[in-house]
Image 1: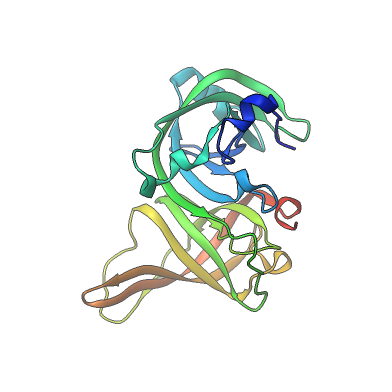
Image 2: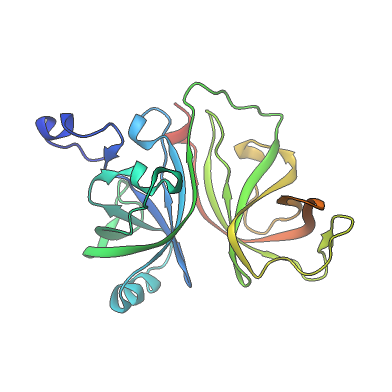
Length: 245
């Protein structure tokens, strides 16, 4: 459970003001992924951010083996919405080895995370019901040599998952009329779907290689995208319980 605050203080804040726990992952750059929950209004958001720390904290983060999380001081998550005005540029909090609510150990306390850019921000609809017949969908982001997939959360019951992946060399096939290599830096998350249903049991896992359809959007010359084999290097995070209710 997220931390509780003084009731009188909490009443003066919007319902989106709370302790917003983050998955901390990556290397260069580092990323936050907000840990969402459908049943708590403050946490009905899927958010991906590129972040930075001062050098000594960054080195401490790099030395953590396994799962890493970050617990910021309470703030209004709407301050991360790029469509809502100026975006919050930093948060203060504590870096944990492991999950902060499940036996995690503090590694660096009272440190500032700089928010370099918000990559993705979506409010989740608690009334929507998940379609298990839909294709398995992810958001691809990162840079060549350091790509990630975050499962695209749509409706309950769902699952939160982050993977480290790479494109298999020589497997990229472009849509007709499109040439060149995939972008070296996915400046924004690119939707990618796979030929399996969107359920936890059929998710991608470490060691999988699967064909992905990457949607780069629509321009004046038509739809742009490519197909490629994706190899899953590591499953960084996987959660179903917080998104089942």
